[in-house]
Length: 244
Image (cartoon, one colour):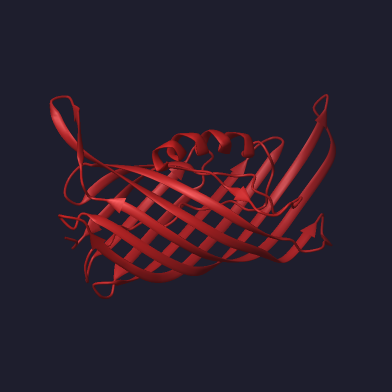
């Protein structure tokens, strides 16, 4: 079932991405912690220019702390999109399986985000309308990560590169703190997003891995502005130090 969702949900996300939303999700933190003292860090970038950074530290053999942030500043003729988001959280992790190479993580946290979006309509290269959306919002999230350090090898140019996979199932509640449309105060909106995330990692060394991340973003409420209009397609680099 998980394998089926890995391929079908990113396709569904393509249809959602055609909509407009004031909420731009970041790459969820999936550190794959395994023991006390381990640190995980990552940096990711999407085709749209949304950059995310993640950090996690295991304060004990089963408790981890998280930090995440993302930023985007896209300027085009018909649409400008500025976005910032920070998150902190923590939770439980454990290893299991015959070789202790499977990992389950349960994290919860809070975040704060800002979006500044401008839409422009042109006719014969003449600006006929302009709409500016200025939004601050807060979020809470709960996520469950499952991943495996059991590796399959990908052979490229005569060299074997270990490959492993993971999944994060995330629920986020996002609520506007303020909302201005062309400088005029608007009614605030909220939404609950289901964000299933799938990632693939290719090990370049014992410390560094390349990661490809895909996700869908499903809004559980019908909203005009706080909608599920963006999803995640990123590539990045992940560092794990001090693990099993």
